[in-house]
Each structure stands twice: as C-alpha cells, then as structure tokens.
Image 1 (cartoon, rainbow, N blue to C red):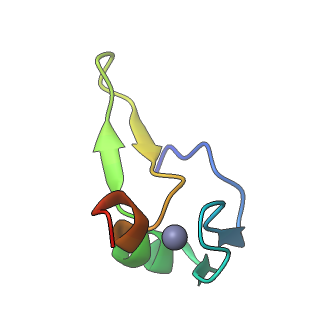
Image 2: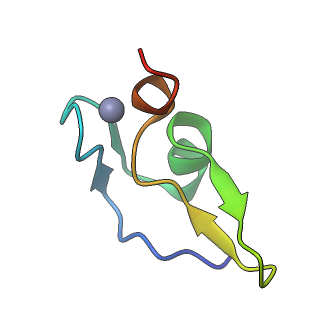
Length: 52
Ligand SMILES: [Zn+2]
C-alpha cells in the first residue's frame, strides 16, 4: 500500500494518537486518494480533522 507517513505516526495536532501499524493508521487516521490516484495517509487523526 502506498504510504507517505512513516510508522509509528503520532498526530502532529494533539500528540495524543499514535499508529504503530498500517492497520492502525487506517483506523485512527484514515487514507485519502489524491488527484493522481495515489493513496496517501492523513497526518492528523480523525478526531482532530473532525474538529474534535
Ligand atoms: Zn489528533
């Protein structure tokens, strides 16, 4: 799986959420697909992106 974030990854906003595996990354941070069709990881956790 294409991924531009190194594990473990801690949310740079709250420093409270860390993903140690790609599975956790998907669950806690999620992925999105850019305009070129590449799958990239979200850097902020879902809580931070949803405005808490
Ligand atoms: Zn966060």
